[in-house]
Image (cartoon, rainbow, N blue to C red):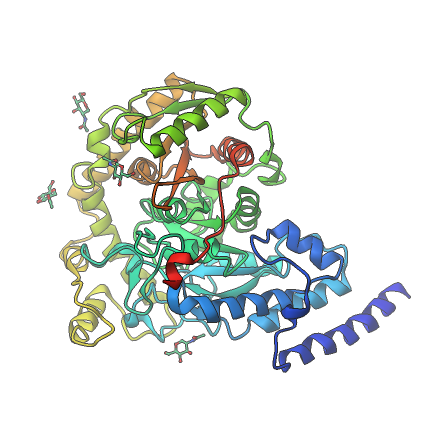
Length: 520
Ligand SMILES: *[C@@H]1O[C@H](CO)[C@@H](O)[C@H](O)[C@H]1NC(C)=O
Ligand SMILES: *[C@@H]1O[C@H](CO)[C@@H](O)[C@H](O)[C@H]1NC(C)=O
Ligand SMILES: *[C@@H]1O[C@H](CO)[C@@H](O)[C@H](O)[C@H]1NC(C)=O
Ligand SMILES: CC(=O)N[C@H]1CO[C@H](CO)[C@@H](O)[C@@H]1O
């Protein structure tokens, strides 16, 4: 009887939600729900008490994107099926009120290099890939769809994840133009997950996904005052994601809160047959029951945290930014953390030098191999190789939308010849540097995390495949956001989440942008 009742009820409900599509004004205008800074938990509570539907939520974001995106350029495409997916999620919830899937009906925006087998294009911001068709969803999107999340659209990004041109600015792509920092229009939004970070900051989606090879999640997260988790390489599948390097690429959440980022991480982490080796290897790090249990207010208690001072905190302790960090360090100590200052990683200047470490040689060679592999997997595509992409850019360089930022990085990559012994040496050099560097320091000092400002640590985490979490830490004199990054060894996500969450809850730094400078 009960199920029949529910069934009939949900049928009536379906009619209502479908009708709302054709209403001239979004229903969201009638919801008393406060959308600004809405979290997954606040949205799920509103779903439960029927003050909000997923359809209303999607309508709200679509309307915000319509009005703000011409200035922010955070979104490349919205999903024509987003409202249908939202209606389906609303229906699912009516049919099964005990569905406790946290992401059911939650709109997710994806960086434009994350493949979706739907009406959305997957282009890394480039016209060269417009019209290409992926043969299946990326591993992370497959997992998101299973939770009932709504794919809201694709976020803008630094074109080709910043691997085409050395001179193109952060956050620029041919398809999207220049992404804008929502706090200070003239400030760098950073990249390459620029659109995901801008959109999360400006409340254009509930949660977003970015990708990182070297800094591409933690840098834009810091610059746009949002939380970014760069997972251990392999924790999340890279299948059907436009690649740079399987050694370094990782997919992670960019959200307004640590809690939301952890909910998304729980949804996307895990084994994928299409990225079998890396995801199988990293699956051992995933705790029973997921990461939510590490959202602990007392998460800083007893944590041993090393401050990498020299070369990282390269601003005066008396500057505004310096003072903010010193205050936060004493707060962390008050919350029970044991901070050790002035720690140094062996050969740090070599590791941070893209050329000297071997990272440049390795990435240039790996990119060509991996991109050609990705392009060959596509069901159809206007380009089938890096050489094709280079010719495409050459042919269209006079067109207005493909600015003349050049393609020096592509040309360097195209001139490589696979994973030669020189490349293998570079890779083993990086492994040595990581082992003698961060691994040795953290094990000798028994550290749970190292702490650095913004994305200054990105190459250390990048070349070693290590995780990091960036949390909003403050705003400088001109209102530009900055972040704090907690980094660790492979599989350290549980303690990094404990630290990041306790830090966030003790400081509560993040403020939504007020768009003042954009309106000038
Ligand atoms: C994908 O690109 C094609 C052009 O090739 C365009 O017609 C279509 O609208 C795009 N899809 C979306 C969802 O914007
Ligand atoms: C110094 O700090 C600035 C701002 O945080 C950063 O852009 C720069 O890369 C840092 N330099 C080094 C060597 O880390
Ligand atoms: C990078 O290093 C390689 C070899 O180690 C060298 O041949 C190349 O010129 C360097 N590139 C730059 C831009 O310094
Ligand atoms: C790879 C590398 O550059 N290793 C150097 C690290 O630093 C020591 C001395 O500090 C050198 O001997 C290594 O060659």
